[in-house]
Length: 307
Length: 307
Image (cartoon, rainbow over all chains, first blue to last red; front, side, top):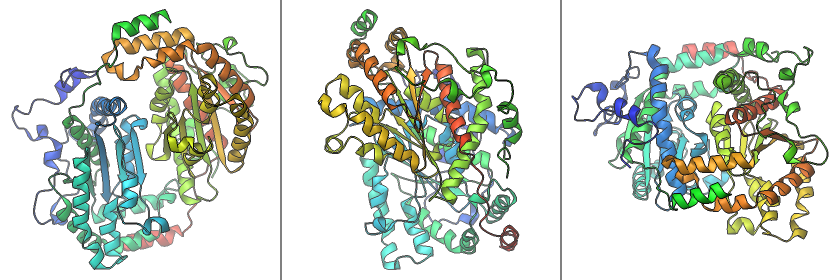
């Protein structure tokens, strides 16, 4: 079966033209546009309110653009899931890692981007402060246990990166310990990728001003009080230290096998679309096929008909 | 805050009239209409293609009816989740149990009904044949481990009921063992409900003829081959034995604290709506409120503004 056959083949062909077409900005894969370039990272120099690669004019088109993406994302996820069921030993796995300052929209991405696909094929883990048991283990222990199985899309809302972010900013372990973790993470992710997991790491890049607006919005709406915590302001005071910690993590852990994508996140509609699009592009890259029948179709049709 | 305040208050008020209104069939809660009556269960006497309580004319309206339900279901789930975050020790939990013959649409319900809400607040477990480790434990051991946490909606695609269904039909344990399980299940579910979990058990009731059509449809479409297994026909040969086992499970385990709902499942659009509606009604019954602020709003507004 060809790469473009399937339920929405016509649609794919139309929406995702061959890359030999003129290299218009909109037609370059988003994973090229958002991939963190090699070298020193200066987050202040990366815009938080840009909308690179968005195939519409702006917010007014966002719903339609998302609706256009959904059938492909949905089908790609179903192919992945089907492969996981048919050939679990060799089926790929996908891991989406979401990181970002408070209010950057990790939860919103889960709701709106991950919400586009069958919830059955998704395994979401929201990492909180580690428990006593988790602290008694290596920092990757709890991460390892949450990895997606064959054919699944795992989603990490926060992740092992907290072990070089809040841990570094808040001095939760000595520098001698956290400073070795960048290399540990790289080695671990490399092995993860080698064993068949596609890792898509998204940093949701929100501005200091936009965070203030979002915190105020939570305080303005009684249906959002539960999302607010006075501790958020204390964390906000540490914005420069967090920025520095993020820059180090992005710079040191954006590798060939598992690069970081920096997603401008001041515009929620762009952020949600961008993560969904990145996911779709990575799924497309797996060239997933509908599993072939491992039975004789005609024989089975006769058996079912007679039953 | 009143029961109907919130993001979609106006909509709720319109769609879910006071029950003192004239008792038209469409206005009775679906949980009344589909609740298994006490007494002997004869599945043959319960229609598989009926559409009780559906607030539209039929399939042509199904999309619109689902779209009408979604905002309430979505908000109720978010209130549940918010409560779980704010007061985990006392927050309710919800468990949706899906059972039914092959092709009855357990997966379809997860995709279409559960897919209406934020995937973050949902914890789906698909129970397969037990592993060696699971078999070494009491049959409820693996079930217990998959229960939803505070504020979460757990979804069981198959469940502990398999331990009185396939186990009984296939003689996987001696009758002396499985025959005691009905009472064990009732006692266990009673304790589960007493500790704050609302249990919604749905039997997706599909006809023998409709199952044949659905199996043939899988064999007609290469994108569905992966859903077909020649063993499905062997299971189908045991239809009468499964029917008997289901009748026993429904009859013996439909209790005051955790009744069974029989959902006619020959029409997919009805089945998906009905389970979403049952879930919405149970969430509504919890009278969930947005958590109050446990901080001083004005103080925090000043802190954020100054930050």
